[in-house]
Image (cartoon, rainbow, N blue to C red; front, side):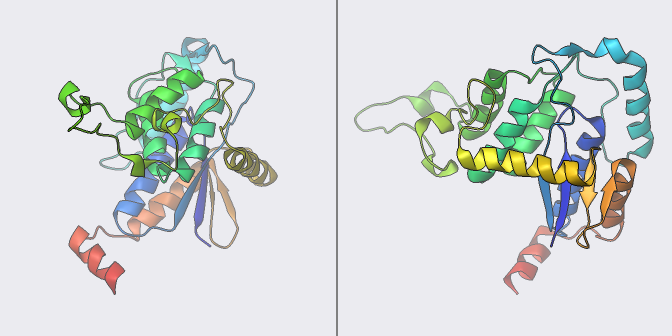
Length: 239
């Protein structure tokens, strides 16, 4: 069994956990699965101004600033509006079907914590997904003619033009497929049965490390996983 990390896209501690998961994988350790959950489904889909809890945000962001390791760029301010992350969780669950889970996870975290975007709306989440599935290009690239086919990479998604344009989330904000819905429900049930804190790291032995303890375990994985060159990693995988 690999490590499993549960996190919410509007949680700064989960943002730091996501950075550490990517770094562990980059160093060749692997064996980590990310599962997205909503810490508070009751958050307004119209968004909640972060200024309402200014002191609490200052405390949390100060804490992750103190926890950040060299090279870990963590936010020093909250997004203007706190999002309801139901649509974002649904998009991530569907992204696994398309083989784009890590890319969508990073993009949503970046949208919230770097770009300050409000991601409660399924239409905004669709835009984020579309930027990955159908990246922008010059007009010449997409110009169509009898001897010039449209440049659409159909291999990037499971099926369907709609998915290619980011429509992996319904207009109501839920997953578009039964498989995606089952993932969301299973992840939430597993997370709630063990802890109701994000992030939460489940070790291979089944022990659950919530919050700061989970972040500490990810840091330990980094300490025990020195960087390796890409060429060395390819040789190791081929062996």
